[in-house]
Image 1 (tube, helix red, strand yellow):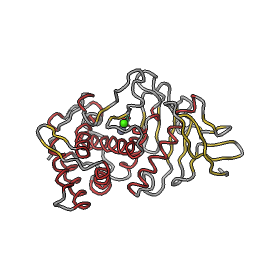
Image 2 (spheres, rainbow, N blue to C red):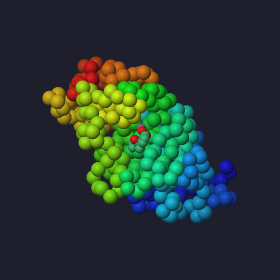
Image 3 (cartoon, rainbow, N blue to C red):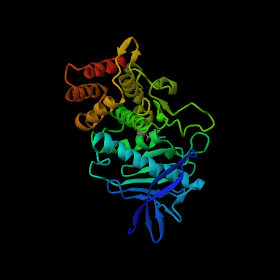
Image 4 (tube, rainbow, N blue to C red):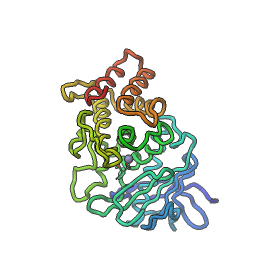
Length: 317
Ligand SMILES: Cc1cccc(C(=O)O)c1OC(=O)C1CC1
Ligand SMILES: [Ca+2]
Ligand SMILES: [Zn+2]
């Protein structure tokens, strides 16, 4: 593509205005951000399931049509998530070598899913009742991109306990990214795109996983075969741990002293990228987080003590 970097403007899934980098060519304006790594590219799936589809092209660099909204948010939030990992954790895209960030929106028909395919992100439009277009939620986009970071670091196998930790890491960094940009932040997942007709609910709550029927203690873990051995269920154990570690609280009689989002981010990032392995279970997650906190703050630090408290509070030793 030959052209120049320019700034486009448009409307997101929630009707909010935003600007983002586009690429001006003789054909028009592409959703290609040439300013981040090897580029952020957003494609139109045209409600088919062939990926990546066609690179998004617009005639006037103004993305105001309703069909444009999912693309505006996928493009903008991928850039924001790139910035979070770059500026906060000094990681240049998911492979730490500037890998292209590729998203396809309008994937499938009324598709109630989002995902990381192993090489790109895909976002369904949702059916309009259970879900809105999935790229409309920053925590969802950061969740999907964190799967890529995980694949290129710990590479946690996506089943059973390692899969639950994989999922929890995506929820943790989805939420930390949402707080980093102060984007109506909370410890809920997908609240912006879940059940448009019901305000205040979410796909999951990290503060109280039991609201979605997920465990908030290791003794309550799911041990069946559904959901790849409960990867979106037992993620509640890691999610509750992270919530307590950041905010503090007493859970099943165990007191945790909160250390704040920034330190949780540093500890979890180092845990994910330096210590966890494909077969890590929750017990190894505890040991790894203690090592990461020790590296960062010292063995006798309040942060290390808080990590031990947080894992103990959710029954992981
Ligand atoms: C909606 C959905 C379905 C299946 C897998 C995922 C997945 O990416 O694990 C998924 O996305 C999420 O969980 C995001 C956080 C809301
Ligand atoms: Ca959220
Ligand atoms: Zn996930």
